[in-house]
Each structure stands twice: as C-alpha cells, then as structure tokens.
Amino acid sequence: MAPAQLVYHKDEKVLCFHHEILYEAKILDIRHTDPEDKKSPLEYAVHYKGWKSTRWDDWVPQDRLRKFTDENRELATTLRREAESAFRQRNAKPASSKRRGGSDRSSARGSEERQMSVPARGTKRGRENEIEKEDSFYSRPSVRIVMPDNLKSLLVDDWENVTKNQQVVALPAKASVNQILDDYFNEEKPKRATSADLDVLEEVITGIREYFDKSLDKILLYRFEREQYRSLRSKWENGSGNFADKGPLDIYGAEHLTRLFATMPELLAQTNMDLQSTNRLREELSKLTIWLSKSSDKYFATKYMTASNEYIEKTRGVPNPNPGTATSRLL
Image (cartoon, rainbow, N blue to C red; front, side, top):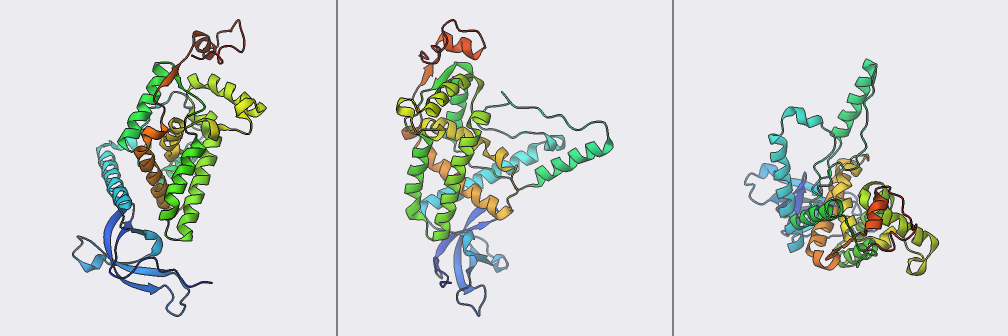
C-alpha cells in the first residue's frame, strides 16, 4: 500500500463539512489515524473560522475537506442558503403536513401523471405496516439538491411551454445529455486532487446517465411529449439515418436532464445510502447544477416547436386519417 497522499497542509485555509454545510476553517495539525502505520489514512485538526471556543476544534478525515477555491466558496454559500431555507420551511409547516407524500418540486411539474397508491386496509396490522414503511421513508437522509434560481425559472418555462402552449423541445437537442455530462467531466477532472475524488466524479456521472436512461419515458416526459418520444425511439431502435447507434442520452438535452435533477430527491429517497454517501452525492449533484446554471445559454433550447393539429389530435387519441404523418409534420 502506498503512503497516504498529503493533499492539505498545516496552516492551510480550507472549507470543511460540518453536517451538510461547508465552513471556512484552518488546519492546525495533521496525523495518521494509526500512529504506528505511516500508510494509514491522514486526518486533520481543524478550527472553524468565527468559532472562538476551541471546544469545537475537531479531527476530521480528508474527505470532509475541500480546497478554498472560488468554486467551492460559491458551493458553500449555496449550501448554507439552501439549509436556511429548508429550516424555515420546516418551522413554517404545521405538524399535520409532515406526513404528506411527494416533494416540493421546483420544476412545477406538480402531479400531472403521478400514480396514486392506496394504503393497506382491513386490518390493524396492515395500517401499522404502512405507518412503519412511511416512518422508514421519512427517516432516510434527505438529498436536497441545489437548484439555482435560473434553472428553476427554466423548468417552469419548460412546463408551461409543453403543458400550456402545446409545444415540444426540438430534438435532437443542440447539446445532448451525453455531451453535457462529458463537458462537465472534462472541466471538473483537473480540479480533483486525488484519485478517490476522481473516482467519485466518474461514479456520479455514470449514475446520472443510468438514471436518465431508465427514467426518461417513465418519469421525465409530459404526456404531450410521448408521441414525439415514440417516433424518436422507433428511429434509434431501427437505426434510421442519423439515429443509428443513438439512444435517449444522444437525443435529449438540458431541459430533460434538469427535470431529472428536480426529481432526484424522490428517486434517491428509495435507496439505502448512508448519511456520508448521501452528503457526498448531494455535494456532487449540486456542483453540477451550479455549473449547468452558469452554462445555460450554451445548453438550453432558445425556442420550442409548435405542434401541428395532427400531432395534437394524436396525443388526445383522435384517429389520424393519414397514419405516420402527424409526428413527421410536427411544425
């Protein structure tokens, strides 16, 4: 085993996670977790800026530290703002609201196609089982992903364009989900100080691709977009023209990827991640959304396509006298 890599140094100014928030801190000392083993992981004594009492000084593992960069400082500010907002919302809610299903979606997707579940009935044990399941669900770590204001605004506009104005995103997108994730990875890769940090980045990007591929047609699409999806799917499955060797990740873009980020808290609540993994994933996804927010002009569509009468009728289940023409004459 190679000796532990020294990434941070004594007296260095850093950012350090304490629960879900990044605080400015200073490294006071460094040691191996096992003093007898120079290959054991390093841990760092930190003092949090503004915390006068030394009783809060702490020995922390390396994975709780972040370099004091402008990017990480912005993340720290955003995480603090999100945490304060969540705290205010929790205190403002009446007690009876704590057990309501669903989540506060900034995308305004609401419950257009949400499937309703019926609790077990008939026996006391059945009701107790439902309560136990619900308690288990709400006790899991929350993954509150940072959603910058301009992405929230774009999501609301996206919802209105599709559901109200009966328009769809022009596809293939000007920048596919694959391209967006590749661009982010290539920009972020040089900033990773250790191979472990790079491994985390690769895992997160791979996970986002898998989530998008599996959830696009089941969760992310509005009803009005499904006819467009069916047409595109037949093309990439048949390898037609420019669609050969393509798939959802090559066809759809920033609009649908951002819908995934808005839905992620609900999806991740179904997993059994521990608190440390949850916090790291939240950090990684939040950094990605902040980056996408800054690059929104590059990746988001500037206009939507207006559907033809034939397409609209087909989405409503009205028989089309000329099958196969509605989607091809979308404009």
